[in-house]
Length: 280
Image 1 (cartoon, rainbow, N blue to C red):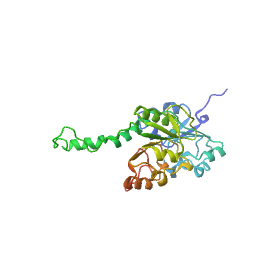
Image 2: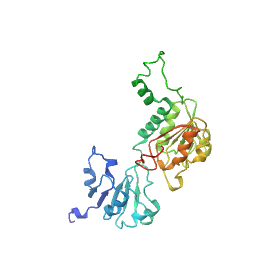
Image 3: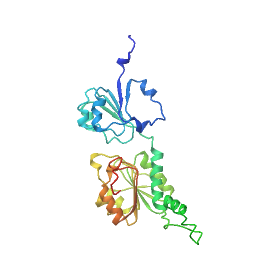
Image 4: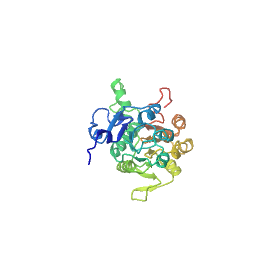
């Protein structure tokens, strides 16, 4: 058999490699698989031009919707270097016979941990106390016990978990370790010990804390709207470590300003990076 030449290898394009490898990893294993071109970032306008000759594309957030896919005739495979794949039109890809895969499990523990880091900042305000002590506020007090607010205990509260994949399950485990009762809304979850399956509206009505862990799809865009937020108990908190587009952000602003929410912890935004003048 004739030896494989460089031209025989598949053409691979990485559209936004910086998110996957900011410089601390090696691309050599990927180069062994084909002719590789790596772009640290790609704007929506650059995607087609850069991927036109690609048979395989790796992307994190670069858009690969119908308008892009129809102009990429050689494309056979899309690898999403993340768990969420809302930046790909799966129906359009299937129509063209393009295989799409994502990465599962890589952030299960770290994302769940971060969700509770955001929640604990809301309940205990560690950063605010740190800044206050540095300003000398504690030193100016006569009492040994200094606090900016009463501590909100998580024990005994209902934790609403929206989405029950690997991350959602880990969030539920941590919540139970804090002494919380866990309510779950998921189209795929089945009954199990220590978890109560409920409809989305009931979850928001009964939960003192809601943590979003679900994927973003066209049907779920803006699902956390004013109607749901206004049904939450007074003093409730919302955490989003999933996708910013799940929340109607203006409705969230109003729910924090006027109630019932005591606060929100957001790791994601509908537009990333966010505009500097956004009220959030």
